[in-house]
Length: 82
Length: 82
Image (cartoon, rainbow over all chains, first blue to last red; front, side, top):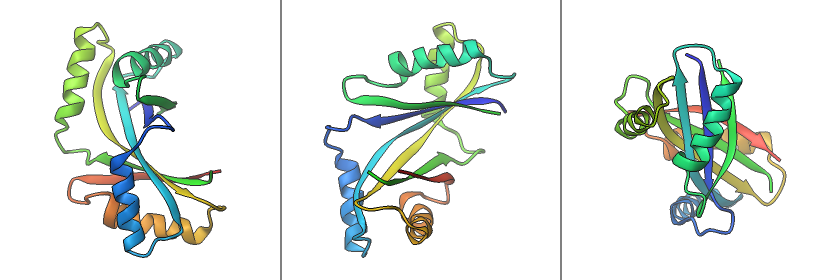
């Protein structure tokens, strides 16, 4: 099914406690090569028909105004997938 | 900073209440072209050096055994980014 994928991450300079907890746990299990872990959202928006340029434009608008909180999050990617 | 991105989604046949709520809200605001919304995780694993094939192999193992719950989630993508 055609879809648009919106990827949202916490802003770079924001503390990410969840990511920090995962990074610490990975370090404890020996993965010391990992310097940091950050956790965000991957949102799939599905369509019953082919995705158009207009759909991508409205997905950008939805992503910034509805799916993310621009005070603490950045929309890092919006991609179309058939 | 070099990183590996792990993308995890709820299993296809699993109810996704959060996604359903977002889809309903988008329909109410007029986006009736959207048939469904599903919400998953986008996890960045950062390294202080270039990412190697060995890092990708261990990321696959970490993704399935630690970052996702294979009863309710699927790892849908693992990609390297410089």
